[in-house]
Image (tube, rainbow, N blue to C red):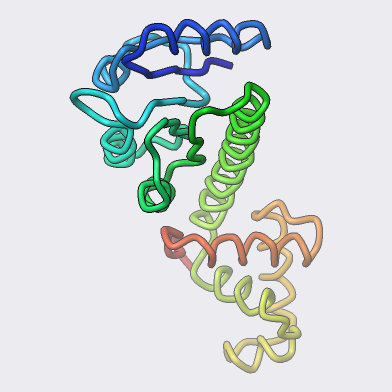
Length: 209
């Protein structure tokens, strides 16, 4: 796991870098936000710790640029001149944490661990959602209709009436849906449908009937 440290104060970079390396973390140090954004290293960064007040691009500018680039890497901002308004703005822009100096070593380490844990959960969620989207895209329009109605708790007979098909046909569609979605039970199918509904970018059903 690589942590990127960004601060225009060389002494701060050295001390924080030493602290994190002693805890077994890989560290890359940058004297400016622009230097970090120009980074070409292949090792993925799992967390960014940046000072807020720096010449050129500030920590808040960095957060804005990362958001523009669609980066999901958690950002922890640190400052010796922070205030409540700045903290609120940073968090609203997507910063994971805002830590005011002076802070103890444990506080920073716990924030980094929490940021990485949160990012891992988010990555797992997005990967799971991608699989669900792919499976849904392989359903026919009718299969998608049956899946949505099953997830709403309707019985085979109720679905049959609503779709003007026979209960036996509904049963067949339902079996196909369970197989194609890889759902071992109804509860898992409902979870998948809810996850899709909660995602604003969920793709509409496609495929031939």
